Image (cartoon, rainbow, N blue to C red; front, side, top):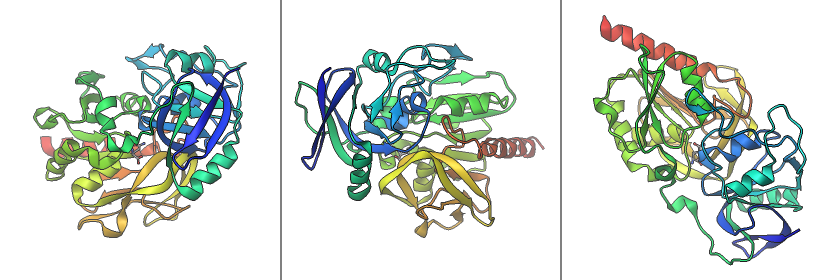
Length: 362
Ligand SMILES: NC(=O)CC[C@H](N)C(=O)O
């Protein structure tokens, strides 16, 4: 059994056992308190550049699904076509697995993607450290010594976004432009199963000439301010009346386009049990989340209001326009993994898109 180290920027070094690829990798260390869903989280493009610490103590015991299985042109059981995290940190790694959809074990899968893992470390202690100090740079070090690397300095969205325009459900009456900033597959599934056409475009694509009825902006990795071209394109769309919906990074980009500001949370929200409250109601929803930045809703531009608020720390979980059909959420209504309490937001958006379409035709 080979040993590797998890090394933090402050000099703290923790030794553990290697699994996955025996290689060195550097990134931002973040923790995720979800109890299930590691195949989905590992393939979520929003984790690009991050070393994920899983607080759930046993990881690997249900194996991983066949990432190559395709249904309706998208990977059926994972959230993108590769492992997106830079490294994985777990307490106890289970090589043996048992699950109806288990195809191979996590160690083999990480090796195929050249992603290092470390296990046999105290993830509770690491999480306490991250909660106290905030998310910090770190590296998993095998033989090769590497430098620390801050992924938030790079335009990660450009690395994970599609390079070409792709259509799903082509020919359907209602058409949604989906700006792919690192979209999770389940967002596309949530649209296609509702019968709309999805026109998936690169993050910096000028979609203004396309024939479409509603605009959707996806989740994605890194610091939202790096997506300058997307923000400029959204600014133009905000002048029009076509319905707009955004998730996670999409929420931050719409906010920035409207004139609000974003800031970095101390250690982010990464779990399947974040409580949010809908403004003007006593309704609370349990949501799936994965983000490190947030919108500052203390200074929202005129015409906008807070849509949801996080009940743990009071931060903004979404905004909506007071007159136009524009709304966005910081959490993940498509879940995968996580609770599906807020999937109705897709229905709300499509309802608005159809309403808009009828008004235009009339
Ligand atoms: N899941 C996401 O879209 C994450 C958005 C952004 N990269 C953040 O960390 O806040």
